[in-house]
Amino acid sequence: MTLRDFGILVLVCLVWASSNIISKLVVAHWGVPPLYYAAVRFAVVAILTLPWLLPAPRPTWRMVLVGLLMGGGNFALLFMGFQTASPSAASVVIQVGVPFTTLLSVLILGEKIRWRRGLGIALTLLGAVVVMWSPKGLELSAGLWLIVAAAFTGSLGAVLMKQVEGVKPLQFQAWVGFSSFWPLAAMSAVMEPGQVAAGIQAGWPFIGAVVFSALVVSVVAHTAYYGLIQRYEANLIAPLTLLTPLFTILLGVLITHDHFDLRMGIGAALALLGVLIIALRRNQVMPLLMSIRNRAQ
Image (cartoon, rainbow, N blue to C red):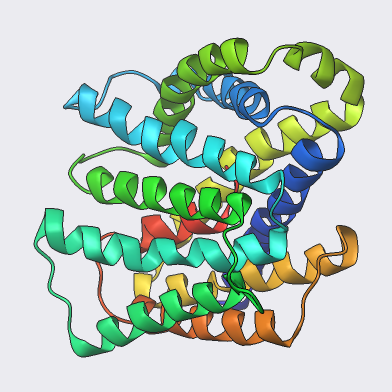
């Protein structure tokens, strides 16, 4: 990889990590309801990518389903989880999306699991359990369980996306935005009274967060990432995106004052080692998965 492209990848990972911190600030510190935040940012994504919406991919129903899973469902759960979970813990726990995707690839795409990938799955799950563990036993944190659910929906969407051919990056973003906005807006209207007032009260920082997550994260960073995937082997790109959780932990400790102790450090090391082992094995959906797992879209 050229130094220029490596620099682009590092910058993309930093953008994804920054988005995780910003999402935490929006829903936990500024009081913006998570479904409303997700709906507004997907509305901006849909508007920005509207020229790429047509012609519709075939089958269209599958693209809509993928958009709902990887967009609305994934990030509604993610933002709901950020209300109580720290970005540092979430960045580790969401790594379970990698073994989820591998297992779903076996069930849906007929991939085979060898012993090395099996070891990676076991280490990733063990690392997530260590992070969620407390002296009283497994900590049933609602926020972290929502992060696990977000990882599963994103993984299922990534596997189903493999069955949709010929979709370009901006067209993919267009369908994710279009498919996600409507159900998120409807659910927010029903479940989050006063959401518009909360967004107005948050003011310009909220508007800046939406523009950053929609324009910089979804459109710019992901277009750059998919360009790298086209130029280099997935087994080279995917492991390097592990910089994202490392950046998230660093920024979480510095900005949102996340608690990070030896137990979390051991859990993070185990989970990231497991992901690295899986990423170094050939996997049909790994490049797409790594982008979903690392960013708050």
